[in-house]
Image (cartoon, rainbow, N blue to C red):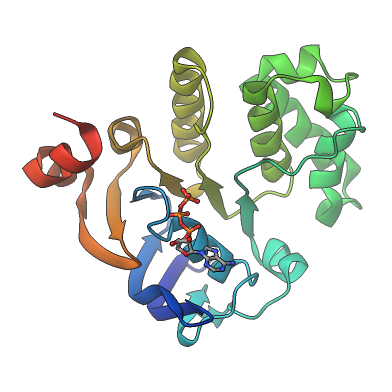
Length: 239
Ligand code: ATP
């Protein structure tokens, strides 16, 4: 199997006259958990949108496994192994928890046995989803919906799982659980790119990180380097 390699090279994005991203360079390697840190409006979601083809870069290229992926349709990206779990969750609220998971496994729908195994694994990661498998997704709490969104993304067997602010709006105890599960998913072999405002919790589980301000990467380094960087601590950790 070829080594997973994901590269963003010199990507710039404009919204009309507004420059949202300028010359972004990032890479994620096989097995890594990489965090993209930044305040509200810094450009994290725009990077995710550029990767998933929702926003067209003015310049630059995004490559996965040696292929150019910017401009690819979302279903092609999923088939290739890039799966995004969006902020705001985008579940099917009237469908049950298990139906939502089945939708996530659509690309592998021919392999029923494998889908069943993945679903069992999702239920093991998130026991609450098993408990509520017959309930409407829309009836669950915000934290449970976030877990379902991640579970649904896992159903498509991602090679690169992109998580946009999975801790947003969750109670502190649930945030802790969420980060532990994200770390476990990574340790079990899924490469992860995580966008977060919660710098301290994210850096504790990540291998490396990038900090984005006003559409530009201003610092990058190992999690330890970033955790020990006084300016990062002041700006993002509050210590
Ligand atoms: P958040 O955590 O709030 O999602 P973010 O770091 O993900 O923040 P982006 O959503 O990528 O930030 O936004 C980057 C900048 O681009 C912001 O200044 C935002 O106001 C602007 N922006 C985002 N979407 C659009 C759009 N469709 N049209 C114009 N400007 C936009």
